[in-house]
Length: 386
Ligand code: XIL
Image 1 (cartoon, rainbow, N blue to C red):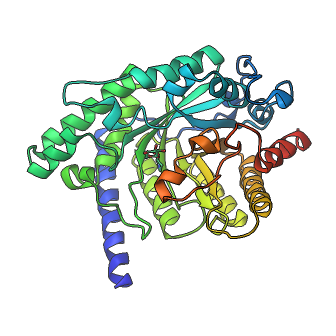
Image 2 (tube, protein in one colour):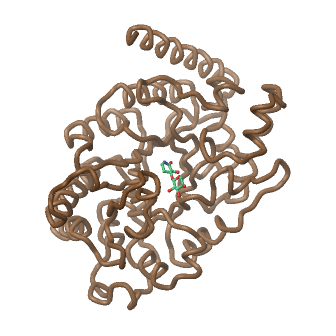
């Protein structure tokens, strides 16, 4: 059974490689290798206004974001434009501690492209405007994903309304329009999200089914055409350590790069828990092999759930802090790891409770926006390794 799956996986990858090799012949204008420009991320960001409401005690202390610039690392959070503009304490904490923002939902297909001929940039624009006003970078998330698609797309798929050519046109228009709208304002795009299964196969998706495996190379090419300055990332979960999934991501990227497809980095989502997280040595090894391909790594969506342990709360938070510290340390020591983002601002904003159906506390700030042991652990490494 597993043998067959591996064969199918290999077959899919070989097929994909064949496609991208053809693609390279067709697209000769690509630059073949893109170097990691660390200097780009160490530009000081604008001054942030401290929020007296959330954390008066650390308001004047150096922040995560400002300290990490010294390591060439952007510190990010997933945010909502709505909260940034309606909740002063939320906005204050974001601008004080972070240098990179990812709209948690507002640039996803279902939100930004709700009808065939209609785009809705409202919330995404709020995030970008806030970032510009506060000197922060933005990671665009995400252009191509099987999930959070609007009804008009899933209905058309179910009904078999469109040909392959028409699906190609739809996806190309989507990418040109969204990336074009934000041209020059997005530091890095998650171009393709979660395209590979845990078994190392191309994941079943509307895009794979309608366009075929070359939807991945096409998406990167279109994004690059729409904004040649934006860094382009492949983003996924559970491919952080050394396993069949990260091996497949590596092989896929190797093939794309050899074919001249413009890929700049790998996003490691890092949705982990107290009982399941990548070993530091494996994470470092994975970052190293990606570096050898000339790829950057961004930790894009880190959270560390604590619900799977029955230890006392203080102990769980201490273990969580140790895990955050370990992952940050690996990133700090890897020259190609240039961003470290958590998925949500405080425990009150995390997607984990609704996703898992259980209460949790997976982030760096508690329900009241107070720094947790995990925050302190990272600040301490930042201070001691300046
Ligand atoms: C999640 C959001 O946090 C939720 O608000 C939404 O309901 C579902 O999506 N991987 C991703 C993110 O790439 O886009 C997901 O975000 C979490 C998993």
